[in-house]
Length: 265
Image (tube, rainbow, N blue to C red; front, side):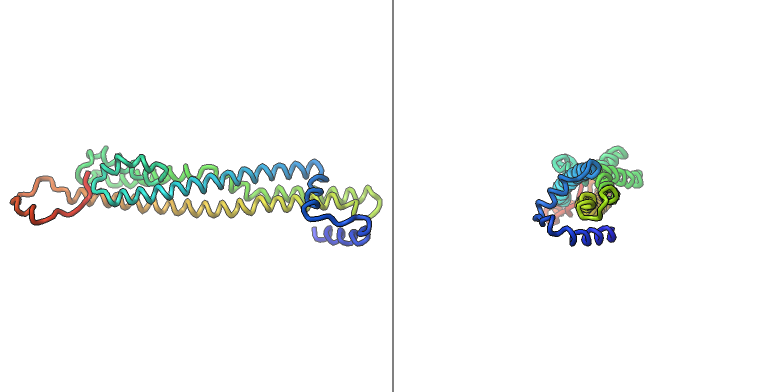
């Protein structure tokens, strides 16, 4: 590639008088217009890949933003409420949040075990329910992320294919023209350069977007794990502080002492 560019600069010194210098935008448009069928197909493929990758990134950023906003609202509601049954009744309002799925799975499993009263008979089952809900939510949020990673990985190689083909075409034109001039090799070199640049323009945003979205997914995974543990602690604390029989105390004690605030079912 370096040798080809050096050869092109050497030929340009010989043909400088015959070929006027074009502006940047018109030069790029002329290179695309003069591209062969292979280079043009590569450019179209890279354009479609770029549109698809940007569609994925914009949709994911929008979805993650809504999920983050609803998660914060759901946590505020959960921590302010004294009854988990009240949280369960309004949980669907925060459905874009992945924390809702974790809460629903744990709460439903606890209700199946002992109708939401007392200590859970099988705490391990609650932990498994939380892990399952977290995994399912992450899998749903990771949809189409593999396409973004694929585009980020193969776009430079697609551009490289156009580069190699352009160099081959340049040397073929050099051999058939019979004269070592810039006019003989310029079309192939322009194809090589434009496809390489297009491949990088597609790959770089896709790599940055994939890394940013992956970081957000790890953050959501950590939040769901933390919330699952917080919910299990709330269930255990509510069960431990719920007496099986009403306390035998005079009524005057209730007027002077305020019962502690705790979660109930």
